[in-house]
Structure formats: structure tokens, C-alpha cells
Length: 274
Image 1: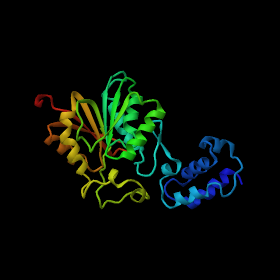
Image 2: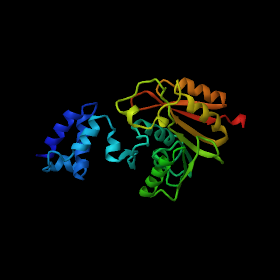
Image 3: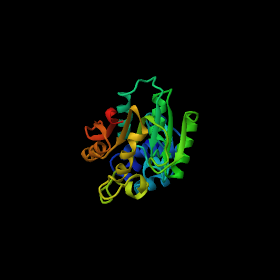
Image 4: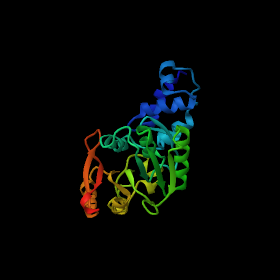
């Protein structure tokens, strides 16, 4: 059968929010070709060529885990079970940082809870003179982050450290980035998220604020005088996270994502306090 006929069959079985796109990616992956080559060439394919992948996706497994990769900030990142799948909304943090620092800035970047390395590596791609320290409590995440840095050519500018948020981190940084867990334990999630992605990277206590209660008080000691910390937040958490910043003598503003929802808080040190 033709590949695009298989795509139509797969999309009907997969369902969900983006069945056609998911099916195109999965069938292309099964054939070992790009999605573009699939759409343009429409090659012949055995009916069962993508069967195992279709079954996994229909059960709710994220497409990124099936493919073993996810694009973030135009970077092709390795991901897999135990590693949070980078989302497009998280690119809001890099966009916010672009407004604060020129492209030639020699930034010292700290990525707290790096996962796949997405934020640290995006920062290194955007600021060619920057260096980054990527931390995570998960050995599996750090292993993947190192592989991503090596494959993308950033290993000479990116180091990793096993750390539980800010514990044991020395020095000051011009840009601190973090996408911490911020979902309340009883909150609803999208299909497949709770079932497949690492809970430690998703859930943060009853109110979803536990990670911020640890990260925000540590920021003043980690930020350079003119530095900035940009933390991803849930769209209803801005007031609570800003309040934590005020308690730590930090000045905060809110950044919105492309959908117009609160997506990040940007913190600066209050100079008169330090």
C-alpha cells in the first residue's frame, strides 16, 4: 500500500489531538525517512510496517518516546522514558532571555533540572560565547543531556552536575533557567503524560509550588548583580511565585506564551539589598 494510505489508517487508530501529524511522524520513522520525504514521495510500504509504533501511540505513549527525539529551539534532542519531553511553551524562557541579553554576551548559564538539556543547549545555540552548567538529580537525565551536548557540538561549553536544585552549586550566573515540576498532585494532565513521563519532573506537591519554594530563595546567592533568573510556571501560578520572589528580595515580572497565558517569571536581584 502507499505510505499516505497507511498514514490515514494509522491516524484513525491513534485519535487524540493531532492524529494526522502523529501518524506521519510514526510512519516516516518506521520507514527510516523524513516526514518531508514521506509526504513528497509517498512510497510503497507494507501494511504492518509501523504496527508496533501505532499500537504504542494509540495507548497514549508520547510520540517523542517512540521516535526517540524531540525538536526544541530548532535543536534535535534525544529523549526517552524517564526524560521529560521538551514542550514548545518552554521556548518562552529563551525568548524572554533574548530581550535581556545581546547575542554576543558571554553569559554564564545555569539550567536547574535540565532533563534532556533543552534549555541549556538552546541558550548555548543562541549565545555563541556563553557557557552552561546543567544540573539534575537524575543520572539518566544527565546522561542524555551529555549525549545531546556532544552530538550538537556543545560539549566544550556545557558541563553537567548531579544536584538537587541549587544544593552544592557555587559561583554566580548571569542567566538562570529552569523548567521545574509545577503540576499539583491531583491536577489533571494531558493524555499519556501521567502514565508515561517522569513524575519527578511533573508533580510538585499538592499545590504544585514545592520546587519554587526551594529554588527561589536560593536565587539571590546564585545571580550576578545584573543577571536574571527565568522560571517556567503553570498559567495560574504567577502571583504565588512572584510572592516567593518578594520574600527573597527579588524583583519579578511575568512572561506570556504564544497563547497569551502566563508561562514564566523573570527575577532580578534588588541591587540595594546586596
